[in-house]
Length: 105
Image (cartoon, rainbow, N blue to C red):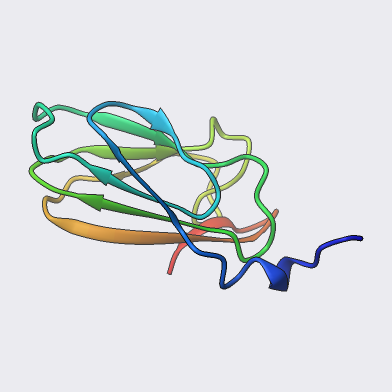
């Protein structure tokens, strides 16, 4: 049985915590731990995404979080990484299609 992308839209998130760079999975809500040292961190977005897949990241006490796909899939319709240099935020990215790639929702 083939699954349609719309079947994934309301999938529950898997909750994780990290103190270092890591790869994210589809439908993962990753919290960057407030006990992590204040320095750059890189989160790799899933390369096996379907339309409607999502990831969510909550960041506490850290700046310079870079989201990357290794330029395999665009982020916000650009073939480059996305860096957010704010503290105390939650961001959700949704996979739109192969042209736009991942975008902030």
